[in-house]
Image 1 (cartoon, rainbow, N blue to C red):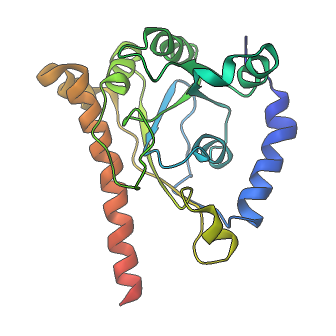
Image 2 (image 1 turned 90 degrees about the vertical axis):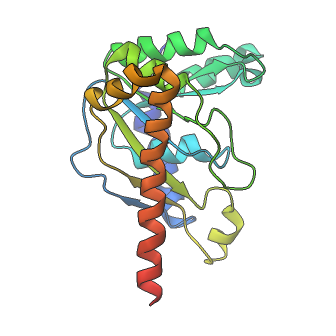
Length: 213
């Protein structure tokens, strides 16, 4: 079942408005956003992440969602229309989700992948799983790293103590992660991609320190 274009026409403007007005979302480095096949890779801190990344991206995106959201016919229909596809987090190997992601990227779509494989419960970065490296190697698509902040504490944003923030980094070209793949396979590629996400985090933190001074 394919993603519905009505999501971009009707639902996306609503999410963007909520993100900007209620959560004061700030998006950095969105200029010259890549077209064509693309993997978006970043940290995962909240169940809020996918819709707000979608709001920050100026094009249609697809993303993985836990398989329990596809149990009923209506929920399954709605999730597919939103651009989601199921992943079984209890399974050691999610070949179905990986193959779906590869197929979408090969069709010229943009797919959101969380290299850590699951949501961080304390905001700290987890270790990279091989999945994103496998998808990148199989598609040869560029990877755009991003870093999220604030989605794990929406109450603070509503009280104007913080804000949602999405920062995009420099596009990772295939030859970069392929060099890592040759050294250590998909796992090494995934580590390299997650390192680029950490670099965005570190730049943000250093920038904040300069602002405080």
